[in-house]
Image (cartoon, rainbow over all chains, first blue to last red; front, side, top):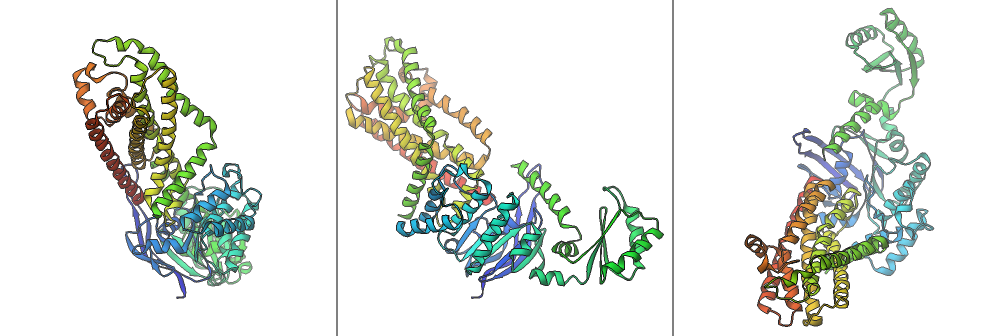
Length: 340
Length: 257
């Protein structure tokens, strides 16, 4: 078996209520993860990443579609799936009134581990994650980064084949984040299959061997990060047309019109105040673009040229910039949270 | 077997958490003592009412306070489950091979153990204050079993309701709305034959009253085994139904994840 995770056409809708409409969290999500690799699910807030993880870890049931983890069907063989997976949810699931050691030991007990082996394993994990000194302190006294590392240690106690990490670095400070990146890379070197969800582009770029970009419950692009980026031929050209947002419907048409005649750029997209385009040679295309815009009287406040990034890949496939989608998703999530 | 072991691990987890909050333990042990002393003093002369069959009010009141405390400590246990849900602990546990039952039952067992200790303290205090229980150790054991069943059943109902409403404020309101009236619609403070007729009728269907009658009768010189077995049986059935309902509510919660 070469695939540790196989996901086909998952659909999941959360029922609406009087105040909030129904949310289609997954809309035909499909991807597969090769054994022993780190696979990234990259997408803005609200893209459906956590829902996918909940289904694959047997916590939630899809409306339709199938998921297999470690060769077992998540719907028909949930107990077998639970034995081969470790899961670190977006929300820490540690017991804050217990010590780090008690947390890990309790988890191991639930998998029926022998106490002597479990104690040794707990010691090994806590030391490996830099929690050796804090092992017998109540978790309430831990920092955010320590708590997150404990989450991962808890998820690993029974030596799972597949580890799910749902946004493992969200809310961590930069130092704790780079620490966590090191831990994840080390786990990957040991041959563990890891499904990592993140809304940080650099994180996916840095850690994932392959990744799927998820938007509105579907995979819009899949491949190795370098592959995805090189699929974006040439450079990205970003032009700022104004300081802040506003109604620019008329202007957008003018801009498109103006740039239609500039052969050095293609894939022109306007997203609020930002104009995005691609060019084989960004530096050469800029004067032509500026000239064309000036000729139509469009004011320009800034111009940047960049090598392709995952942000560009996202933009290309969804028509919106990652940052904008992320903020939009976040407000959506807040509304959903308020409903509960 | 596995489910039993898992329930026990959960019980140990809750006991440990409790032991780390000595103030909380102190308050929950002192509160029923205050009830006992307060109501005992306030209604002391109630036994002089014609028809009251007991001579010492403390003797009469103590089983009532024991059962009331057991019901209250169980009744609030949904709050702990809600906190575990909010912190993601429940979801983390559901991803392991553990099933739903032990997640809830572990907490109920811990509550029952706590109220058993409470009961022993209350009975001991009552004896110091001059109460007389010819039913002896056997009677105390039956009282504690009745209290535990009531604590577990109200704990299950409270957990189930918590899983359905998922909001602490709503749960607090509901618990406050239910617990105190159920105490006053029972023979906790007053011999039932002296209460208005409609209250006597309601009390017949009140699990709290079943538990109090069972305990009081078991402690008396001449236990009414017919009553103990029938009300005890109702209590057991009520507990089983409550746990079943709570597990159903857990399913509803899981579907919403």
